[in-house]
Length: 260
Ligand SMILES: [Zn+2]
Image 1 (tube, rainbow, N blue to C red):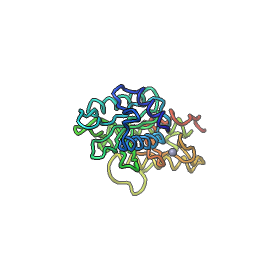
Image 2 (image 1 turned 180 degrees about the horizontal axis):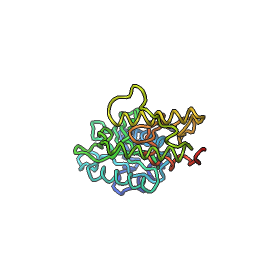
Image 3 (image 1 turned 90 degrees about the horizontal axis):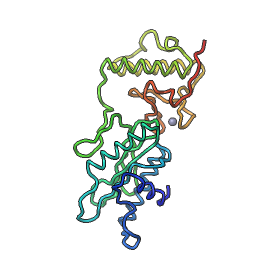
């Protein structure tokens, strides 16, 4: 992504951006480093999201003594903007500078049109960027993004997810649930209801593979590997991305007729 595009995108966003910074004459080495890191971070995010025509903001810290522009208001606004884009079926991201001695750390959020929201952590000038799926994101007390990934499922959640997965299988694999789900629980199964559910879904997926469709459900980003089931979502292992919530697989994978 070129710097010019990045600056234009930022300007089109939420209004409180300090990009593209001071005129070239006042550009310091630190400004340049920050721009460089921001460019790398946004490039890494767009590997997940694809090009986002309009982003949700690049927030940088004001220099020297000014008030910090990156606060709850900006981060909450960025999160709302990403979630709203998702509801419209659009990719979106936002990044903000983490207050730090050299000011080149960026955190952020990104989501493709159908993936879960991912948190972004950029670390250091070589822009080590880590993206992690984040279910039900919200802004925590210390201005970090909190995720519900580790929330424990209730039996009711499990029943609901199972029904959703069943719908996915019947709409997109061509098999009836009864034909692919094991009649007795998979051997060696133990643990929580969520683990039992995952084992059941995985067994059903193996049965679909054994019937001749070894890529089901085919990843809509890469086309050469199947998605896997994880935490109530269909997941791309390669991008570490939650692609579609259980029950919504047919929004990213073609529907097929039931085989007889
Ligand atoms: Zn994939």
